[in-house]
Image (cartoon, rainbow, N blue to C red; front, top):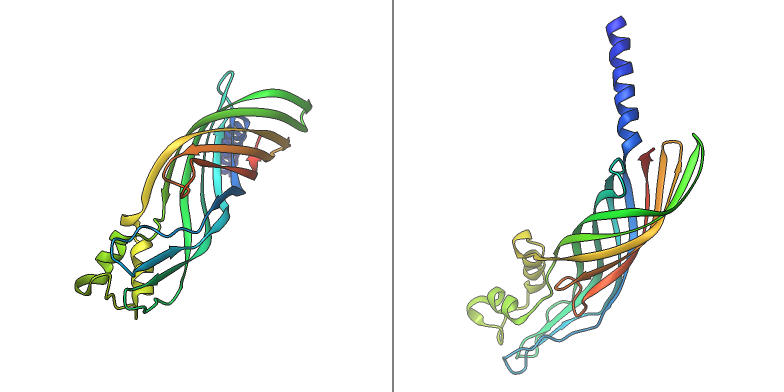
Length: 232
């Protein structure tokens, strides 16, 4: 019994030490951007491809940070974000593919160094601080439909005479295959408020991401994010 109590106390002390220097939890947010309807250039006369417009994306994920390092804090967070849009295709014979309601999405990882700007606190109970920071990010995203993609999927019949009977399903399968995802990386800056009440931890922050080849037709995007977790 004594050993069990000692083990329990050891775990409790270790947990207290972990949360005294770190935190982790869940993160949700909304990214702000606008993707216009686009018609990729098709070299075959009479063939039409349209990727529909969509705005913004909702995200969900998690985070982990360490605040035991002097001067700055280190954090990593990851999320999945996405929104839906329509894909329309018509071959040179005037036969249309059933509209495909597809989801643009990305998986994102952010590595950030942040620093406290102003801090206030109630001893042993609660504290809050304004912070700012920046870092490096990586992304994997679903592609937009294009001529090369459709030419490969249409096979021997070619894109001009493409059999559209099941093209929507074939296209969806192709675009959701992880081997066909697009990779990109960039940089970001962020700032916001962190509030702690005992071991409960929350963040509200704004982030601006600078990255090519992620948001179609854009050099980056902004997001507003909320975190709820545990820390000290």
